[in-house]
Length: 313
Image 1 (cartoon, rainbow, N blue to C red):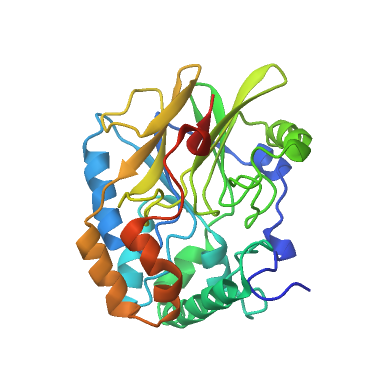
Image 2: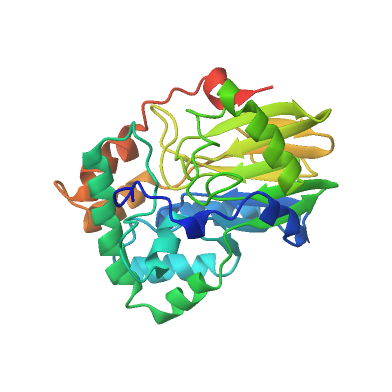
């Protein structure tokens, strides 16, 4: 078996055909919020964005809404807010429910992620799991969540996942794999098996937007990267995916269209200082999360906001 943090448990492997069998939830505007990572300031910023919309918005938190929120009050606050909306589990939440720790954080990290980073992620998750076990209401909420959801907007069927079309912790909707020619047939097949025209994901923690043609129709993958952390070098903002029949009142960073469906990445401009204070209160210098993430929280990842990195149309 793979080491903890690199393992992809069999229970994560739902397969794209499960998305085709899921009931379609009708919506006009859908916000897909992946990788909140316990950022309370980002939740407040999201509320402000929703208030700017003309009509009601469906929100789906597509996993990893918990991570840095090891303080019991922070954890409870995040979970109570998420519970007001649709959600699916990410690997973080799935492993909070696991009886053992054999999968560690459940990230299923690929080989290009160093062992020290994997070990720190396992340490972060172990601490978070202790917090979660003190909150029965949160555990009950998480235990009710599915791994996938299906939506329909403007006659477009949408699969919302955490990882990729086949697995909760899959990495094939990430930057390293999305343009791999060896995966071209797999991409065509999973759109067909899932019976969708668009996948919205997160998990890999870096954003992308890709448009393909398959079976004579446009197909799109949008990955919001992280709602609760910076996604681009030198920018202190999260990202959320917005799918709607209407143009966004909040200016998108980039986007595309499928027929009448607007597909946009919206910057989530949370209060950086408040978020940094929350983070440091739980994860001071030399802690596992500080070593892995604090530089990104301050300066963003080594990922420039370039057209080739963000979209393909």
